Length: 263
Image (cartoon, rainbow, N blue to C red; front, side, top):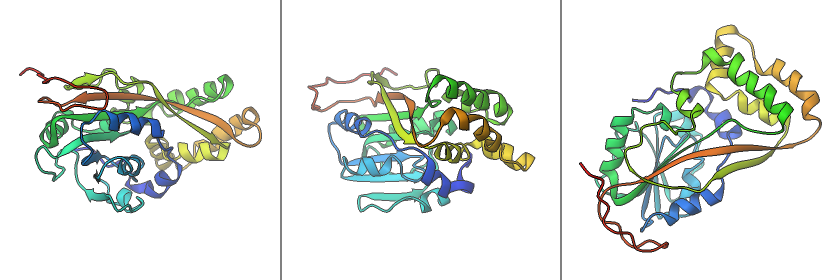
């Protein structure tokens, strides 16, 4: 079962974590033959759940942290549940799509993948993504990289390595689908950035252990580089997408034959 690293700052997480681009959800919806049910696992505050509800008839959004779900916006087609990734409570072969946004690296891979296979329809799709270190401009990026890689180095949980590696080395035993590149682009002030950094697991652990806010000295270094007003911030998205074994119906992109994933 995944650890709960996020209940203590659910409201900040909902306010300051970036949303994902609509094109990502359009592309994911195009990979499924039907659009009856999507399971958003590790849903947090619903950053992916609500966009999925615009493209699927029903969304079940689960998270281990009840306080995260309490901060999620209500939607008539989204059913929020407190549940572990390995035990969704969903019926067998009911999901067209399973998504894991910014959370797969916390899971017990074997148990979650078994649950995903159980609930996916034959030919259904599992998509997992994480956003990587943000970019602004070279001077700012260098300061930010020092904060991430030196100041916080000893405070990151071990699972963070999967994010650092862009999910490339993460176990993913599904018939993989090549995905296009996606990224998040936002206009942020320096205050927006610092508020976002305070939601990081490592920032919070350092703050609690040393009774100080490490983003304050970071802000002083960044302020003359940042200038007044907002800057464009870019997060590249690392995405792994795979299909469950079994017969696949015709998709918008053409007919797909029987998929045999082997033993």
